[in-house]
Image (tube, rainbow, N blue to C red; front, top):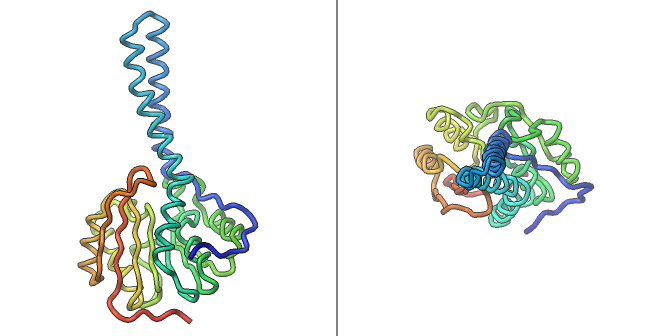
Length: 249
């Protein structure tokens, strides 16, 4: 279907897990120090072993950066194109951050509304804030159809049967306790309309999400193989709520 907008600028969806990337750059720096010391003091073995942290650090940091800047957008576009969003739907993104999934959905609809909920923790994604998400919406020309809510995905402040689609990308794993993640899936099932769809992208705990989706009464639950477009490699958990899907008006 593709994105349909009157974009006035290019959105910036941020750098995912910046502390982890900086840590691997630090590992690379250690490699540089070891290698330099080996060369300086004519210790070839030390210089050789300096290559190990240098390679690991640079390759991992580079892979994560490319994933943040290019890979996650490419995967997002493929997943949402396959979702076949209708023009008047109401959609929800959990842990929306700077709006990757949220804005990707609303930009594919000529009407409808996209709601994002987040606690806005910048440690999970560089520059995460309500202001930056709204700025990305403005750049894509969809700000009038975006509604942001400050809140916890374990306790969604919405009535039952409120949304046609619920998504989450690299978000639910940030809930540290198992019960909290299970509660999140129960909430997803509660606010989803009959016939609605769930789409979760994550690099960990996806088997757990699929199990919880079944327990919450969702149907057609699927867990994909690893997707190469993002690093760490992610899986996609999809599901739906039994019933006939009716487009929001």
